[in-house]
Amino acid sequence: MQNVHTKSIIIYIGVTLFAIGFFFVTNNYLGEKRDNAYAYMNNLLLKNNETVNLSEEVGLALTEELEGTDENKSEEPEEYVDPYEKYYIGTLEIPKINLNKGFTDINSKYNTVNKNIQVVETSTYPDVRGGNFIIAAHSGTSYLAYFKNLYKLTLGDLAYVNYNGKRYTYKIVNIYEQDKTGKIAIYRDTSKTTMTLVTCTKDSKTKQSVYILELTNVENI
Image (cartoon, rainbow, N blue to C red; front, side, top):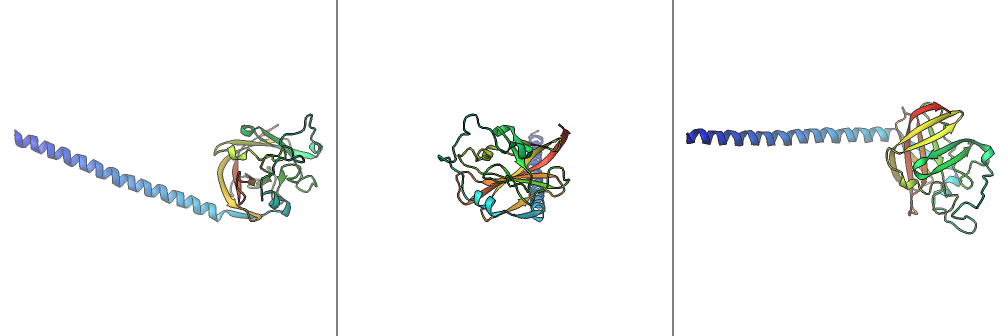
């Protein structure tokens, strides 16, 4: 009887050790597969790297945050009327940070970070399949720093562009920082239609923040 009991204990211990071993082997295998998948995606993103040269104006805008002064007040003046509204061809909305701002044509003289959010020259408009709509703006404390709250955004947050009779919905899929060099490297899936937002990084004099958003829906306004 004792031998049977001893054998049962040995079998139990053997099964337990086998289960533990199987768990670690499986876990290592899955972990290796996961790491390989991450590496593959990183390589894919690196292959899809697009370097965009910024105009001198945008480059300077990303050099430092725009602070509120007597000239650049931290709040919009009372009864503020946007003098550029009649030149807008669309609007950018980001509900999470209460942003609703118009943008002008790329070639407009009012397409400047010192007056509005600026559509970067190498951009394509939202209706171009596989294109990339790139917008730059100041951060800081001035009321002209339209991207001052961009740092509050996280992956999965939504933004909307109203343009040419349609409403484009975008979702944030990547956020990263880069050194300020007068250029931005854009890591995106070029098979997707995207939007890129860029501004100087909060509380940093040497970094700029890049937000990659992918188009998820288009509807008529």
